[in-house]
Image (cartoon, rainbow, N blue to C red; front, side, top):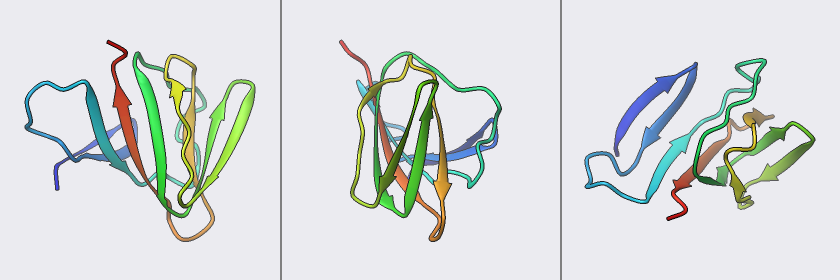
Length: 101
């Protein structure tokens, strides 16, 4: 499918690895059942996670969003956030990260 990577105990697989520079980066992510770090992650760009399977929880500093299969959310990834799988089956999300410009 693409290039797999582990970063800070998060596993994700790029499904567009090897293509020319792009404004969107799609990944398949099976989030862990526990939040990996006590700190939130943030990065430039916009993020669009779509739940392909299972349920996930995305935690922001002032809000927690629960998503089930077929749900999605779009947010500015400069807002600190972290994601985890909730219950069974193990969740799988398609995350699309994009530039604004």
